[in-house]
Length: 389
Image (tube, rainbow, N blue to C red):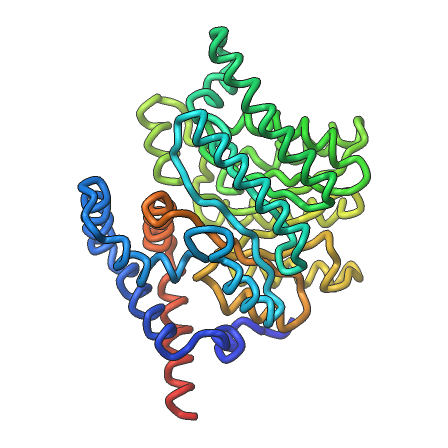
């Protein structure tokens, strides 16, 4: 298969010279692990002390990785990307909330993004995080099959109701819905809830997607078990397949609590697991839909090759590629240039509320071998190409 991901002219066509320089500066900073640690600590201190740093954050890291402070703010970015065939997934990236009013606010915002997706071809999916609708500790308790108090049961019923409202609305409006995965210790409860929604709303085709983090060695078996249940009960499976986002936290908790880590032993094992999940879903694509969330070029090529060898058109609606806004533009824009379905996750929310997400992005980039250096090399190549024009 032709290599397409080195074309920096296509990858950065939407970036001005100034934006290109900013991106290069940001990834240069992120490549320095001690600097990321210091920057994270300083930023957290500044936010807790209510220092006036919002403007600085917005002008640098926020505007590179986020679409805006609210959904309307994002539309300029959405429309701009769509001129190059890259769609958007509006992701309300406010994390770590604990109160019912905050969960109700996340529900309202998610419903708003479903409406946005219904109205705009450039936004083919809506998305939410399970802990946006309920407390992580509550999911954990339910996943561990612990008894709930009456108050906790009432709280869980409200979480289930929020899921139901969003999934029914997405189904009624014919909008595909991605549900993110989170820490392993809360995921069992979320998986059961998402499966209920699939059973209800994926009868004809995929509306509801769960997420599999393939750095977990048990996820392929989970997918196969889910497929058996889907065949028996007559529903379709939608999955966003990713490598994972909580590795250090997972290792640390496993060590503290004395259980085996749920994470694959090596990076290669994670890669193999990821590719095996994609392969399994492609074998059953008649009743499945894939959102391949990856910044890995090799995995992207593998899926492209599977589509070609199985005679599946590049823009078949059952197969989407996804990357995060501000990262891997060489994959996103070159896929779109070659007529594949591709969507960028476009985080948004108040600057201070989105900082936990941004800090996680910086830490992940630092810890993923090769990711930041690849970004830097591509940006450097494009800067040099423009100078020679």
